[in-house]
Image 1 (cartoon, helix red, strand yellow):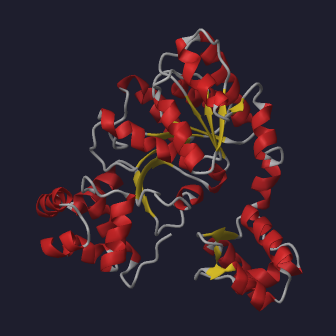
Image 2 (tube, helix red, strand yellow; image 1 turned 180 degrees about the horizontal axis):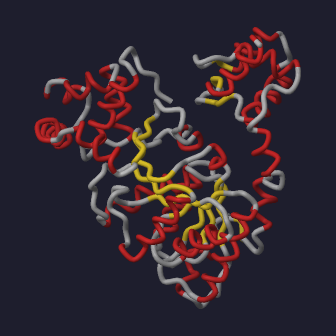
Length: 381
């Protein structure tokens, strides 16, 4: 995660969005700019020569200069307000935790609908656009099963497997998140606009592409890292040898997510990619229950209930007193608490599960502010 170095949060966020308008500035270049200049405003306003010295290519520098001269960033915020789009950055508490932990987490997310804490319990369901009756049946069963077990279904809103996964999750009364390869104001494909409206009412449509970005082919492979990044696991239902679903599965494996694939007919071209994943070590998904076993999600409702409570015993309370808004390392917590590291680690894991604290990378922890405020108020009462 990133810490602002002095700018007010709203002002800093303005310049994060400004930099996000520049084609060629992704997570890696964005982080390099912040590290070099200290904050987004300084990077945005830096002279051309300093940008080049920061390691930004001439082409990207020219893109930045052009955007700086021609784009009204305030108009982006105004449009977002008009269209009900939330803008989240690494600076915001509402930024998805699992995504934030990734080295290449997108600096800015645009959201239509709502992301909630329970969306941390999510599984990606992806696959071919040319879905067979077998693939449809499998996607329907998986999507409905996940929804009935309070697990959010994440997919890409493409035709085929993606659409079926979203639709069945909604029909089962669950939550679902669609990650787009375009701006969230450019819903694609057009046929799925009614589906997008339903998703926004019971989940969210998400993109890291600026508003107005058209659904160009080159946008879709990179967005797949967000589909997997939001999820505990990636399930490939049906996929050919060159399916984009395989890109999502590869991202998931790189991110440490579990990868599952539904076995298919060895003579079917639409199952070659999924079968190859299994040959390479993916979990064969023979029954949706397998997800619950491998991911240890059988107590999901209890996990979600636990996330709404305060410290339950003296150990949790003592550790909670030591954790505030500033990141603190587990070793420092152990030293200050005077407890064995095994007990500290186990308690921190449970506290994180409850939503009392959040790990921000490198075994550093911060308190969740809303819970902290209630805890402080209860102590004063």
